[in-house]
Length: 161
Picture 1 (cartoon, rainbow, N blue to C red):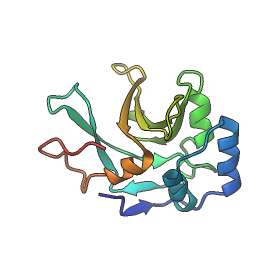
Picture 2 (cartoon, rainbow, N blue to C red):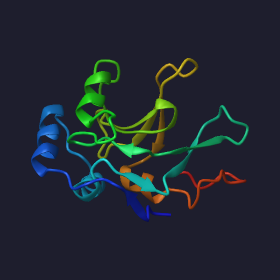
Picture 3 (cartoon, helix red, strand yellow):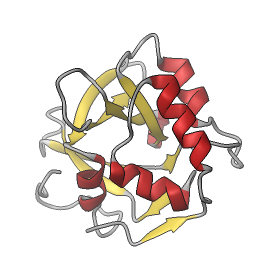
């Protein structure tokens, strides 16, 4: 189910978006640019996505996408996209962090060499995860297309994005 609504957010200043791309040597996917053009710093509703995770007996887990890191000031007091990426750049080269979700984990775009479009990965921080990186979707567009209809965990494994 595609995202039906974006909670809060504002249009991004195109100059800030372009400056970030230049400073990181990347080009954001068109689907990501289209969203932040109107909803910078917003949270999608609904926002839960399923991803393959063999740590669970179901073979998958569900997590909310959370707030997209804004390019300007974060009105909620959290990090901006620059602050998030400055924090993790040395530890996770090639990843561009785009949102913070539950447990302090983050979604990122993986700009590893040899990929036409960066897949979306989940970076899990914590005492047991220690920065593990799990691919969640082949693209930002597919991540949004895979949002679950409600916040309930499906009884059976959904189609993973």
